[in-house]
Amino acid sequence: MPRTPNPDLAARRKQQIVQAALACFRRRGFHQASMQEICAEAQISAGALYRYFPSKAHLIGAIAEDVQSGVEAILTQAHAGGDPVGALRAVALVMFEEIFVPGEGALVADVMAEAARDPALAQRLRDVEVQTRQRLAEVIVLAQRDGRAAAHIDAETCANLIFATIDGLGIRQSIGETKDPAKSMAAFDLLLGQLFAPLQPAAAPPVSSASGKKRTRAVVEDVVT
Amino acid sequence: MPRTPNPDLAARRKQQIVQAALACFRRRGFHQASMQEICAEAQISAGALYRYFPSKAHLIGAIAEDVQSGVEAILTQAHAGGDPVGALRAVALVMFEEIFVPGEGALVADVMAEAARDPALAQRLRDVEVQTRQRLAEVIVLAQRDGRAAAHIDAETCANLIFATIDGLGIRQSIGETKDPAKSMAAFDLLLGQLFAPLQPAAAPPVSSASGKKRTRAVVEDVVT
DNA sequence: ACCTGAACACCGTTCAAGT
DNA sequence: ACCTGAACACCGTTCAAGT
Image (spheres, rainbow over the protein chains, first blue to last red):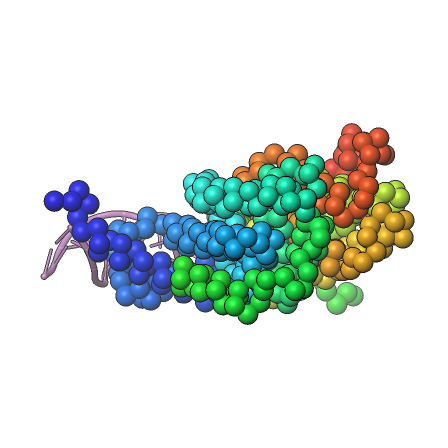
């Protein structure tokens, strides 16, 4: 007899609720979407929902974790392809095109605002990101050994800079400051070009175009939708 | 007889309300602070407040504008000192130390989330930033003429990258990812070092230390408090 | 002209009651 | 064991009534 009765049902219900919450948050934003709406979308009563998630904030926490692990998957996979800079470009491209979409991209800003005030959520996000960050640090050290990055650069500081730049460019894009993902990408390429010389030639393996893009899209949809 | 009766009183009341709102938002966050609290802090009734600001969102709009013009003042002033890179460092330092403070720095994320969903607020922010951005573009072109920045870099893209990086580093700091403003500054210096060679020597005019810091603090307090 | 504060519609969350 | 949905305390906003 299991200590937690019927864990399968619990897992199913949680997934069902997170899906509904994601749909509602994307449609109307975290604070604008009501719990009643989410309950209706998940076809469940308010009381039942609160058996699985103790608050509205925990819903956004679960969603943020999913997005984070999606990002890590993309980085890991593109990294395995042996093209570290291409891996970073693939991550940034997916972020700019799929996550920071003007209108629904506000969700990321909501998550950040929530995390800035809720230490538990912030900790959760940090825990998930630690792995992604270590992987990025490996990428940087690798590039330094190949002589494609200046040896004096501290890998940890560099990783912080790269993640922060993606976040910053993405948020500005979702505010409508830049609108076009290509412009965000151009700014990110400027950073990469200065950090990792020489910048990938145009004839490099097409991680960021056609087949590469299809592949990363699939990963994100797997996790987010 | 003035078309708007007693504009002096109106201006005074608006200031009084914005002050109160800022205090409450910093203390408890945008969504956590109630209009009743703000009314109490401003010593005014709910009905009276709504004569001056049509909604809670408009309060954060007014505050965001104040912060933006504070940033522009710092950039302009430090730029006038003839040290463009120092000017950028001064802006970043103030942002990391005064604006993105862990806990109360969540306000910036709130503003961004709000702007991502409220086109009118986004437009207001863009309008204020346009001037700052042009000033930054001038700084970059200047550096290129001096041979301190690679000529192939597009000034507009570079300005976007720099602002985005400050926002991104700041937000990560207020989430507690980096905590220490010095670490955010180290990452920003890494960017500046790659963009503007050679990086300012340690013996450069002390825009970012002692006197420079005092000065910029004064400006921000002038505008924000 | 300017203000008050009770009232309105709605929110996130809880809990007695059902099956 | 799991769920329902009315009830609770509170929110942003409005508006009749005051001075």
